[in-house]
Image (tube, rainbow, N blue to C red; front, side, top):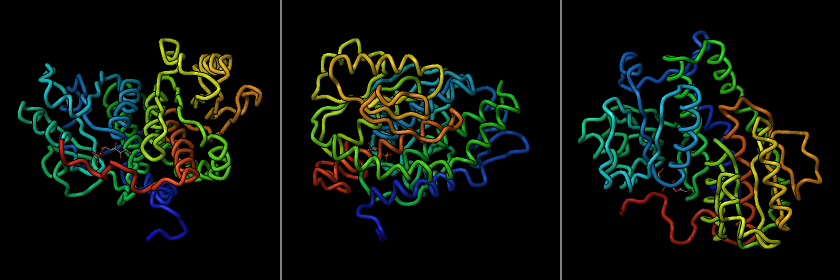
Amino acid sequence: DLGEFAHYMLKEIHEQPTALENAFRGRLDMSEGTCKFGGLNLSRQDIRHIDRILIVACGTAWHSGLVGEYLIERYARIPVEVEYASEFRYRNAPMDKNTLVIVISQSGETIDTLEAQREAQRKGYHVIGIINNVGSTIARENDGGIYQHSGPEIGVASTKAFTSQVLILSMLSCYLGRTRDLSYAEGCKMVKAVQELPALIKQTLSLADSLKAVAKDFAKYQDFLFLGRLEMFPIALEGALKLKEISYIHAEGYPAAEMKHGPIALISEDCPSIVIVPDDETLKKNLSSVQEVRARKGKVIIITDSHEIPSSLADEIIIVPKAHNCVLPILMTIPLQLLSYYIAVELGKDVDKPRNLAKSVTVE
Ligand code: F6R
């Protein structure tokens, strides 16, 4: 039932405050400044002994894994590697003894992710899943897991499932961190940030009308660059994927500074850039990337939580609420979802059922 919404994708974008609340309900422990998960099937000793994490997934879920890499390395100080499931399953990569494998899948049925899980289990690794679809094959076969509780996702382009995956990885980084070097005070800040997230998402969703207007101006372009640094780099990748899958517009995500090593050749008045600019130590660097784009006549849309960026620096500045770094990537994602949605609608595309795509990929 679509209710007031024109498409499932839009409905699911707007369901994110609830979907994310469902992802953290019962999993926050303010008194200990940590998060807790019932189904990992790992003792505290097991957790302490993890010295490497391998995240395996496809598509959007792989992007959430990349955000997880930044968050887990920052808050838990455990080295993380993220692999495409389709590569991992055939690569026979050497792995460390105390590696925890995490598979991420909305559907729980993606064949490459399932086979990657089976391969890791064959080698004796403990595999936990971050899965939305309860009772799916991957969820039934793994050694433990965290359900997303996002509710059914019908639009082919993943929206609420992605932000829920990122949130769970953020909470996991808090939990893993608290078994190691993350302080009680830092843990409490993270837990509080998670609790406050649904309200901040509601605020971010109120940008929908301005993004609709931006989409009208930008729907005519055939190429886009999405740029971000650190954990905003995978958010840039995800923004580019959303745009290409539902609008059929060519889009590429890059770490902002990597642009200079090739993609800058694409920039012209015909190729706009969307730059994610968090108000942190990367702000100045990101703004210099913005200037490099504009010096080549490229149009720029900035997505930021800073109120201090002069409006003359970009063609459009979209401001999301301020939030703790452990949840900010989620807030930055929402304008990108809305932008690609409205561009696709503007172009008259079949948003919920883009050409050539299926909701779950059960063939190789
Ligand atoms: C993109 C999208 C796909 C899926 C990918 C993995 O919007 O939906 O890239 O993320 O096919 O699917 P799951 O998460 O079901 O394993």
